[in-house]
Image 1 (cartoon, one colour):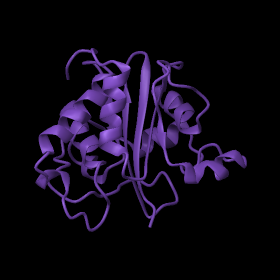
Image 2 (image 1 turned 45 degrees about the horizontal axis):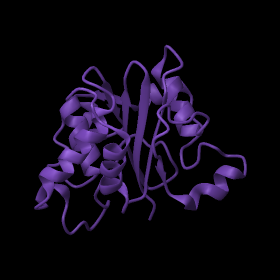
Image 3 (image 1 turned 120 degrees about the vertical axis):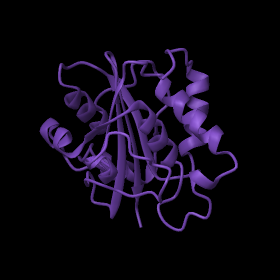
Length: 191
């Protein structure tokens, strides 16, 4: 991964190009606990703001449920232990591929990332987004593909889920953790 040179405008443009057209959740928060999973919980619950004040991405269809007393929605109310149990560590390269793959639809994708003419641009946008977390960042995913390997090829197949963190038919997430920030990037098959 490159060094942390990404600015807000570059990061936000890359995030928008990647995830604007799919049902996703993309938020970052500060590292306030020794246990990164506690910080991820806070981001999922929306109880912390982005430490840099950068944009978030989440569909507003969930807003009414969140405001009616369920701030985790669409996620289940999770403990730090639940998070650690459902996530597997992956390499930085696999994290880039996974984030790029979240740019596609779950089923009947006519042009998955692996076949797109702009594949290199999609991967470059994913690198820009993850560059925020620096070269020493650690990454976790809920994908079943990471159960046996920390560097699965996320672009080789159609988008698949893994350990369920929501009530949707399928969901797939990527967690980025640095010394001072966490990022939560999730895609949902809401059919």
